[in-house]
Amino acid sequence: MRKLFSLLLALVLTLSAASFALAEDEVFYTESGAKVIRYAEQIELKVPIYQRNGIKDPIEDNYWTHWVQANFGDKYNIKVTYVPISRTNEVSDFTTLMSSDDTAPDMIFHYDNPQLLAYIAQDYVAQIDEEMVEEFMPDYLAYVGQDAYDAGKYNVNGKKVQMYFPAARDAADNWATVIRADWLEAVGMEMPTSVEEYLDVLRAFRDANLGGDYTIPATQGLPSTTGMRADSYRTGHTDPREIAIYSDLQVVSLDWEPIKRNYKTLNTMYNEGLISKEFALDADGNQAKTDFVNGKAGVYGFYLSSNSDVISTLMENCPEAKLAILDARSGVPEGETLYDYIADAIGISTGITARCKHPEAVMMYINWMAQPEILDYLEYGEEGKQHIVKDGLRVLNDAYDGPDRFVSTNANIDLFVMVTQTRRDSVSPEAMAATYCPIGYEYLMEQIIANNANKTYIHNYRFTTPIESQAKYGEELRAMFQAISAQVITCPEEEFDELYDSLVAEYVAAGLEEIHEEKAAVYDAEN
Image 1 (cartoon, helix red, strand yellow):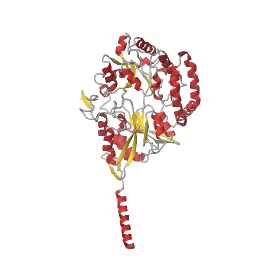
Image 2: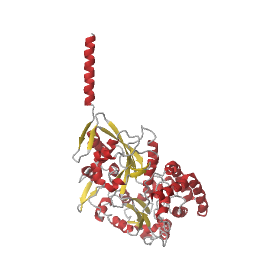
Image 3: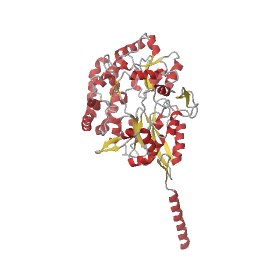
């Protein structure tokens, strides 16, 4: 009996050893030399993805996410789980998710450098092993280039180390603030070229009730930190050190003169009925879009796309509508300079979260996205379905509505945004027009390019050292910022200065002063 038991035990141990051997991960290399792993036991990769306006299908569960799972996840035994992140409240979303191993995604990203620094200071991101990058990410490195990659290095604990994977950034600008050109004709006015002329145009729109009883001369949502740059009011405030301290896309310097002037204009617009009385309820921009496409509003800003539903829906509702790009000088006081900040030569930056258990899987995912054939399919789809060819250029086909339709008007940018913002054959004006403008509206890109020629570009300073106080006070100040915004825009004009100064004094005392002092010290140390 004892002998039988010994034989059985030996057999069990032998089978267990064999099972263990079979359970080893398989390592191999792609044609480009990228190291990849097929996991013996399935792992989960939690990938954040932006939830934007105008999404046609669930952003985390659609044809394209299934395609990624089939062509990447299944190949390496990885379950790819997409985690929706609000585009307008992304910092709050990431903060909540990062509080637990169960909810934390494996990647964290942002466009703006101040918030990337804050994530480092909050210990949300892990340092990247550059030897692993060379092994797992040759396609990514080849695509973005060395300069872009090096932009992901930051000063941490006295040493400059790689903390993020920056994406490539194209030279295109597809932000469009459009004005109803037929409304201008109706009131007999020309395109405004100063803020004073712009306000007069909006008053004319209001008085003529061009949108009916519920006319909204210009759309306006609750201000966001990333949207409150006050570029139009920077005359006299372009010293590089001053910009480094006060110009911020995450914690707004409400005590900075250009910002106050911007709010004073918004206060005038509110009190004169030139923006919606309910603007403060429109934190995500949905109401602004609804007002415009229904023919109620005369001015609206959005990202152009060749399959955008903004223009098509407007034309269904208002076939007589004519559109033009609002002259950017319409936001600048008479006699002052039209400034705009020049974006970094990189797109979004993606970090590996400190809670990630498989950093190599993050690297594999990003590297897979950087392969030309993958990018090409995700951006354009198939000819005759997701895109058509016009004059030798590929144009997104807004008429296609099959089960494999693009999820949003920006195609699949949010799937591959950690590699590039868009993929095109070139960045010529013709290619940009084909990429971004619906057929028949290519002239809008020409007007955007002409607008940009009138701007004087300035750089927002790119800190490479985390600002600890910004991480400490940022969340509270952002909440205060939105409450203050609503109050100072809606107060009577004669009360604006006193109320603004009073509320901003509380805001400064709540942490902004400490942020300014630290940024000044870090700027001086870095320069």
